[in-house]
Length: 91
Image (cartoon, rainbow, N blue to C red; front, side, top):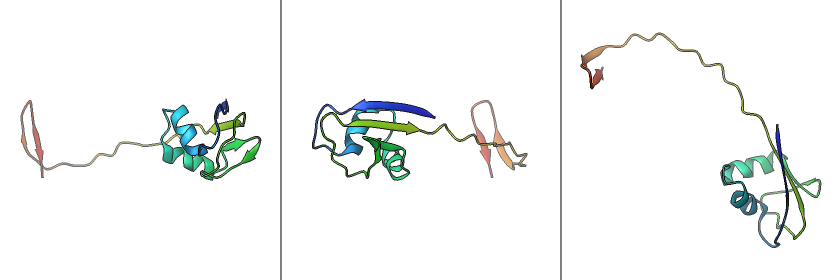
């Protein structure tokens, strides 16, 4: 799990908007999911996406490790209608 800490440098802005501007690699909807799941805290308390930050708020974001998926290939017979070096047409 990755942990990111911020100190708010402005006030009156929604936490989800503030974080989406500061964590450009995360979407706003993912940030809202983290908020809903309690993975984001302000001054050591969980907050909702509409929480308005105050200057000097201590913001902690806990980003869970990506889920490992065990995806295995399947042998699926294909009905190939046409094939050449550039194109493949499957029924």
